[in-house]
Image (cartoon, one colour):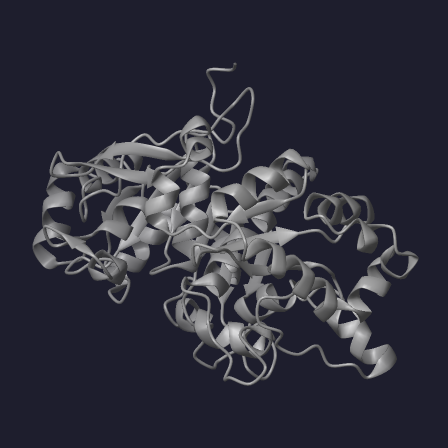
Length: 400
């Protein structure tokens, strides 16, 4: 196992707030990049006060900002903008999720930054991207999920569309931001002049990209995929089923061989050997009959017994976990996905572990989300070589 972190030496300046860009920054920081998070001096990132609080700081903040260094800069002040320009000359990546045009008004757009550092990768996340007729519209992950086509598919056909209980659109965009940035770093390193580039990630496009074959299906046949509740359209059987003890279990028996094993395990060899159900299309055409046969069986047994029988038959099956079940699960524990990390006041709290797992250069949680401006002195006096007097003056003027 290498002692060097995979992104060691990469410096990221994070100008974003809330979810999308900071989630991307977290992933860079977990694998060794030095992530310098810029926050507004008075209150910092609004995420610091979102959801469940512990001693005036969001618990989510401690997860989202782990391994990052926090500095404060007033970007609305010309002196603050000059500080960012100085930082841009020393970093590899600028990561931001301001409304398009905001950084340009401050003289910090991509055209401005590449004049300072031709090798800079500027990764921008916004609701609708940096171009197009919607570019100046306010964008949020929830709206992106709607306009990107995901909300239309989520829920039951006789009820209004529902949302997933997390900021899914933002998180998907954050993943694309990481992918785009890593691709751009690779391209820069291969470029004869080491030129950087702009990475433009739109929330709605990130969501839209997940819609499988829905677009060509509609274009070729006019078929509009609709909400189908707990089923997967055209894939059978794949559903949620009630057990004897009132608990629900998810069973995926949509592979041809898996389906045969499933039917034999539930005592329905007549269905397993029927040529009508030997292909997915045949099963999809008769999904109500097949789901009925499966649930007739699951309702006779408690969930644990259903799971044991199908596990032994090598059929994909699992209970529906809440967070309580997750923290008690041996697989999560064995894979180090539940890590006790110290937060700023000395308390220790469980946090999700690192994804993905790398065999030789694994990521690591070094520290939890920092205090506001915790790394000001380190970054300004050592990284930027700012004098003690200048540092003190900027602090007194509210620039940092």
